[in-house]
Image (cartoon, rainbow, N blue to C red):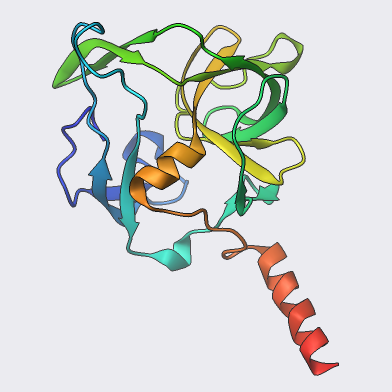
Length: 208
């Protein structure tokens, strides 16, 4: 959301112009920016602590999208669960790809993160944030992974979205809160081989 400054209706590109390389896929508009949760700054004793850092867009080219995470690694789960301490998790990120880790727990104090863009430069103070530790001393996420969907290790439940991190610790916002705020649900079995296979099984069962 560009720290509140992305214009409504701005084209959403995939890949982003920043990620475009010679010989790679041509950046294509797949949607238009349609909403955001405003980022607040100021004295945490006087303002409502930030709970969400999310922007959404309306899809204009659904044929180019898939609910598959990574290159056929696993599909987006349909079910949502609340985070729990010591729960093993995984995610596919734009920068780091597939990484696994464990939820350390809910951050017990206000988490203050510096935000900086061309039109916004301030500390933002967060509440209801969950910390994740990457496996084997590796990072669970790195810059560019923000927005990655965190799921349970078995892939059955969606838990949160990555939005920040430092060192070996990453931070996520519970996905249930995001979906409820925008009145959304997760898409699964959309333009995926698994979805096509499930449809074929259902057709065979109906024929039988």
